Length: 233
Image (cartoon, rainbow, N blue to C red; front, side, top):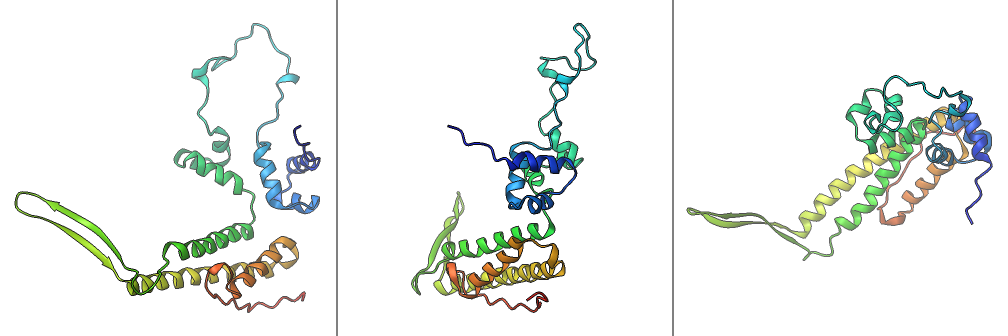
């Protein structure tokens, strides 16, 4: 038996058509902004409302332009995106346009949080990819294979364990520095307009700081210093 549709979907749609932003709708209905954004995409809130039934039909009137049933008259896919993103729709892939569509109403704070999550995930993933087992863990890889009438041979590259470890530590330090910068920027933006921020936006930063400061997820110890004092605490 199909799951019943959430009663708040119609309320959210009505508020959206009144001109409210997704973040405003989420606060008004007390639901996560991500849920509202998903409803907007799933139920195609930006699609024009059907008015065909309310219009009287002329039996033999032939419309100008493409005729019903004529596949040659069908417009190219992505027209809805073209209406919203203008010239970008000519140059960006459909998948990219869909991502733009999903994030169009996201607040700068939420977009920055997405960047923080991606940076943090990249650091975690790098632990597995760049893992060095011990001092004997070296990598040998053929990088060139020459064969000809006058010369032939092979070229190999050897990466010793200490080289791999040193390169990884440099890359990790850069990535962690970038992550700290993003977190600091998020913290500053959050406190700049504290009253307008949602409880979720406030709580998720504290959760990430706790993870980083106790070294969970094997991401390495990254100490976050909060130089911004919350006047409400």
